Image (tube, rainbow over all chains, first blue to last red):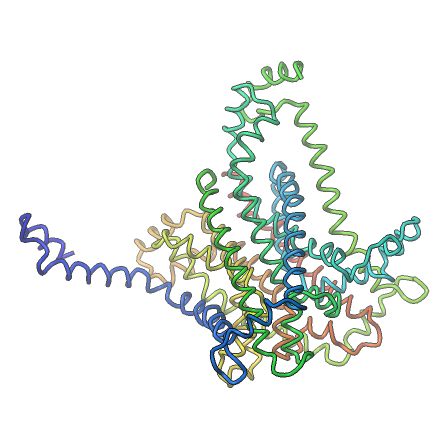
Length: 310
Length: 277
């Protein structure tokens, strides 16, 4: 406060800034540190709990067993073989489940968002929150008990004459895992896309209708363009969560499906040749790179969607 | 279509009902089909797994697995460990997140997008990669303690705790509340504890239940850190009867959903707020 007063008081155009400017800068710095100080514990926690571990992975990814810098780990992975196949399967699984859950989830979220029952909406939001976090072993056991070879739902279908296991369905293979992943991907989509529907203003529809637009044209020219960045952004998040998931596939297939996270887990638990730990870090590093690209794309889309939706 | 348009112009006098009735009905049908299909997908596996775990060899309903559960070796100690972790995680999460999110809302709104981006990271950083980094980076005394898991679970809980708090604060007139409280002479601590937290009750409650669900369901990190929490027990327990493991998984899911639903439906403050919006 005081330095501001002296600043404006004593400096006619030319002389300004010899002494006061650094002072002012320092003052601004102190002020900005002071305003952001209460966020420090959070920032520190994120740094220690998320930043440092990530950094450790990156460093170890480029280290040989003897502790020197090397790119051999990367070369081993990229030269083909099981690890590259693992990435392929993981990416394919994440892509398939995120697109399917994303499209279906958008319709479900729309159906819920346009409902008039307030309590119903909030109950769905609460359930989605639980189901989006419901994964891993519990989820795998539920599907084994229902759609496994001896599962109850399989029995129902079999007694109706269509045993899915006789028609190419296998819960423990790619499409079976994808089927299970939707159980947490779909609620996650509903959870993150719903705010976008609340941002679609009724006045836009009214304006479109007053100009003679049909429902189809309203969606084609107003609704979809406004929603698209949010929908794509949410799908990217689903892609990330599907790509990163480990426990569900591990418990479901007992590690027989070749996904990158499962390969990392196998190395860490010593199920593979000794001395390969650095390969696990390299795999982890590559996953982080892919996910980082995903987040960057997501934040770009978010910026775009915030143009229309608050 | 033409008749529908006519309908619409007649109806448009009513400001709240811009749709014509025909379309309303069509939308309602579409909505019903979509919701029913989604509901089936979510209910069938759950119901089937319930029946699987509560059925004896002859196919009759039996509560015996439930009674056998408590005598299973390791079940009680796993539950106790998970409970401890859940309590520590919840307390830490609240202490860390509540003041930070309130402060950012009030004083650093420009930091909000950054907060949102940071709290998105735990959704996509692979838990298996994160725990490896954590185990490598942490000192030995911390590594040998189960509470290391609680510390990491705080990070995992951030995405939905932040979103829940952010939405809760967005529904309040925080500025007026804080100014009123401050001008009546209370300090920041009591403003948060006695004014804001009670107003955020529902957001905090649902965030807590989700945190509980997280801790009682997290398998990846617990298993790699070699602690037998409930999910690890479910996966590896040497039970004679696999139905028991499934039953435990289903019970935890059921309890979380029911508790959250009860919270939501008994929470009147929230419904009043949304109606006024």
